[in-house]
Image (cartoon, rainbow, N blue to C red; front, side, top):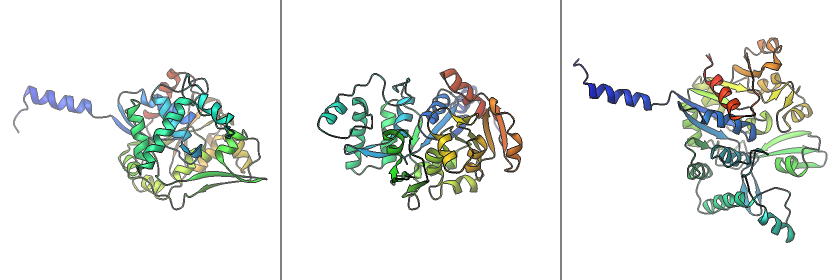
Length: 329
């Protein structure tokens, strides 16, 4: 073998430096998922793809609204309303105000800039563009270099059953502010949904799959239950690590602990892990939950403890680095 020239060595070194250290897939819902997504996105040595939840998508004023995907997009593009964790910062509500004057139902809070994104999505859908193409296109136009991917282009919808009957998740979550007791949960359309090629490719190429600290019942499970999704992870023996959305049995944000309790689960991290047990062997819990180790033995799963509360960008970066540095079997 001839010795490599200095120029060739330099070229090979530069090519190696350009290669991402890890191909990482984050499976995520809205606010909690967006926090971890931001931490991972801030790291320079990874190639990040985010598969976001669409089961709480709904239509308002003739427009398709995708709350979790939009929250991920607004967060990574740096325009999210930090105070509430969703929506666009410094947004106005003049459009919603006019709709209210005209007698429209306006319980879903949508700002003017938010409306602009939904109108754009609607126009693209009218041209028969696939929803996952539209989502990634919006992300790129807003300056996001990570891939934001939909798990399916088909419509799936989380619905909750209360004593008054079945209602959409948005009606339960926003209009009724999580007040009705949940009797049952279902994902309409999920059995016939087809996984997108983009999601398949991301999962297949992933060196590490991370399940975000999102609501396991309404943010993560509707993704995992899409036919063929989990089997890609299982057949290819992918490394998966999940982060608990609960700290000492309470959700940092949202109704996760309340929903778990009402649907027959104990509101703790062990219950969350049981939902992921067929694809995940490593689970990160907050330090304050040390003492749960024995419960995980029966599932052949390994609990890992660290600080999981993400308040600042430094918190998000620290947790992201901690996750990707775990020696996962």
